[in-house]
Amino acid sequence: MGECFGFQQNKIISRINRGVSMSSRFGYNGKQTIKYLLFVFLFLTVHSDLSGEEAFIVCYVDRYPYHYMENGIIRGVAGEAADYAFRKSGFSYRWQETPAKRMMAMLKDNAEKVVMVGWFKNSEREKIGRFSIPVYRDKHHMIISKTSNEIINSKKSFSSLLADNRLTLIIKDGYSYGKHLDELIKKDRTNTQKVTVDMVKMVQMINSGRGDYMFSTQEEGEYLIKSSGVHRKNVVLKTFPDSPPGEFRYLFFSKKVTDSEIRIINRYIREFNNKGKQQLNSAPH
Image 1 (spheres, helix red, strand yellow):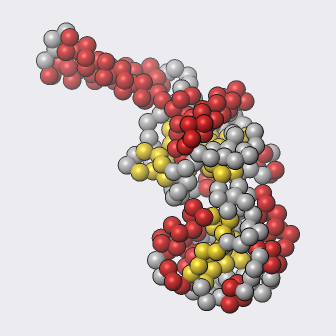
Image 2 (cartoon, helix red, strand yellow):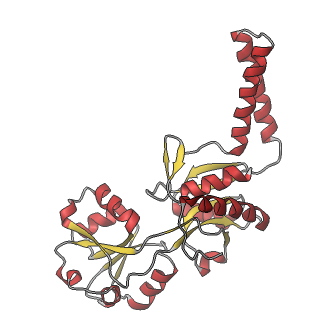
Image 3 (cartoon, rainbow, N blue to C red):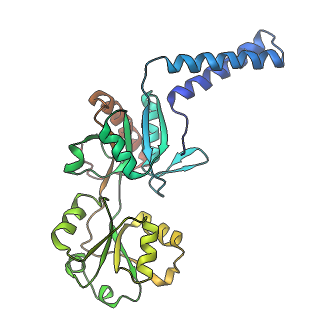
């Protein structure tokens, strides 16, 4: 589990730093200063715990380049937007690395203020939780396939690829590829293999011939291939003129999170985006 300090802990650290300055002003020696700071830390920690403020549990899976922990700091195109919004909001929060199925169970249970970072929005999810404004928009959808797959090499369009049921599409069970792709898969695909392994292992399956292609994004594709250990010449990352546009990614909240709290988070997501750190063309609101 990876965690980083939330706003409440940052306030405690700031007050302790002020305590160092005050102890020097009053002429405390080294041992006295340590005792003083320990007292201040314990007092502020207990005071924070008794304040009645429920911390948000901000859940993520380690997934480059979207959200991942690096030296105790959350990184990634979606992770950094979320962290900025929570830091600026003043809400107490903590990051928690959690498997996707577990975080979904936590959100449905609605016992805590759960936030899931970088999730797609669809009608089923809107029934069980709430969404922020977008924190990121993917680039175009791509596929990963074996370089030697002549059927795929002959394809000139994404639609013809998806309609060809001679080819086996590997998809992750219980995973959403965004509203547009989910609908296309449901409508056009009969030869689909659902798997429970991670996406790196799916690349290995493609390389060993246990499937013909899988979906990826431009941002993630090269990283998945590199992480799989498959020789780069063996697989290809390919797009088509009619490939679906990238989907928007959101913060997905349990219903225990109030509309007013989400409005505050949205304000700072928007501020982060307006700083030019993200380019969200035609973002829905």
